[in-house]
Length: 495
Ligand SMILES: *[C@@H]1O[C@H](CO)[C@@H](O)[C@H](O)[C@H]1NC(C)=O
Image 1 (cartoon, rainbow, N blue to C red):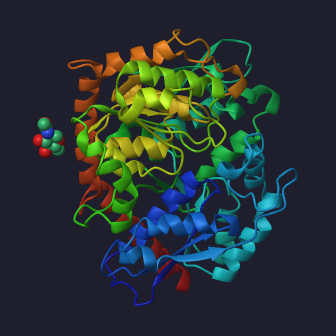
Image 2 (cartoon, rainbow, N blue to C red; image 1 turned 45 degrees about the vertical axis):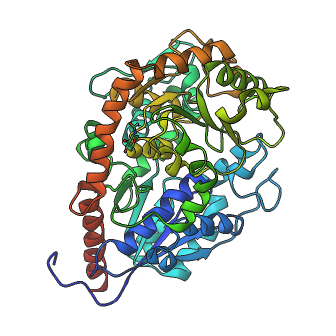
Image 3 (cartoon, protein in one colour; image 1 turned 90 degrees about the horizontal axis):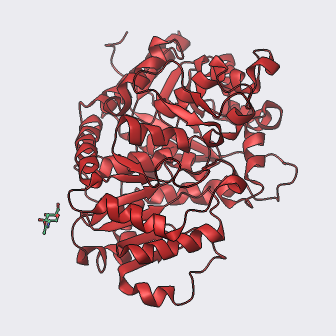
């Protein structure tokens, strides 16, 4: 049936992201992609969020401004459950008080809490296919009852996702006291070793022996295999030896590598809204800076950075003498006395949303100091900008190894041992002093320095990313394969 003509009826796809903006973003991009995938495969994509996340979804769609496909994407809502200790209307970890974000994660992983509203949503929408976030493992069972395919969508890459999965099943993370670091089993060269303090919280607590082989983490990672297949926001050339393991090791039945989803199709002109957003920084300021001279710093919306660390970072940027754009998401912090005057026009402090894709795409960009969140990784790869890594939470320390040890498109901001303890726990992190920040920036960005070698590697990946997303490229082919598979599955269901 693969060559049968497309049905005249639209393929209706329902997408259900986790509540964080870093998930809603790629789900929105995927919905836009699905509606533009092919001239003859008509797709109606609906993204479902809870009410408080609706404005975020709308503004994400607006950033595809003027793109007909973005206006064609439909939006649905379903109620957010009552969660103990969480104020009403707080439905996004980025909007929660720093001590409360975990409550959203715990709720999202609970079938008892989440399933009723999502099941009602799926039944009411009655789609031809469901694309769900990894958190919501029960959606595969619901889709199965309705006789429609359920595809999981991983918004992090194969390397960090499979490293965590391998650590859970090998029990390498068991018995936190036995050694100070773990080795990721089943990965090709180079060997990846990670100090325990840098592991995500669930792996630091994970004890395979005590759990008797049936811990929540094991149930979560084995559920990847449930359902029709897996979509990953990555591209084959970025992490092929790792992404190939999904199928080879039987983690999933079908795998589709569709990224970087944030990379807009190349023939389309830059949308008007993006130009407006970047105008303030770009036109007057970035344009005036020499090529490859500006440092961009952004640590995402979820990682708490202490005031003491922000203070040292400010002084370090001042001492480095480099031009910089620094995104600080803290409404209570202000820079040291006299700092803004001393830095003057050399630096920009951004306290709101920053047009990251446009900033990274500017020729003045010299280096990206990043927390290694997966969306930022894809954006810097697509832009060809080398990185200095400063991971903070979740799987970010694992992803750092992909960047610095496998792809070698950047370096750790501070080498091993130089910074005191690095940790996924806020209270354990050593403060990195100003002098160390200044030294790292100067060394990395000096002419003929390590930044140049990293840049040539990341620029070659950028070309591969664009080729993957272009017509006939690997990500584009995988998108068409996904659509064909879903259309064929519908054919079977209607029989
Ligand atoms: C800066 O980069 C732009 C875009 O890559 C290029 O067109 C221009 O020639 C460069 N300028 C200098 C002085 O190298």
